[in-house]
Image (tube, rainbow, N blue to C red):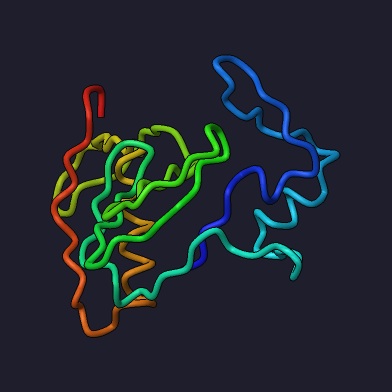
Length: 149
């Protein structure tokens, strides 16, 4: 797993409220290419770690938590400081909540099933685990979505 800072992949870093980096517009080709996995060779990852270092992946509303066996040192593009972390929190820009209509097996009526952001994160982590952890070494604790989902 390679970790890049936001300021490494945007063409020009703009800061907004409280110094938080602003999301780039459609003209930032470097950012959008990097988001699709086409990272220029001259950009060196801020941190690299093996999937075997991940012992657990938790899913919640909007985020995944990767719990690590060995800490990793990562820099902040907001403060410039470096920290040693034993957990990486990843915010994925996924889908919002939705309602699905379905017909339960053996029933004559329709029902609704709510799918929220935590369900999306759970789907992502299970897909990741299927590819990077075929021996099922990583723990995937039950999802505990927040209020409203």
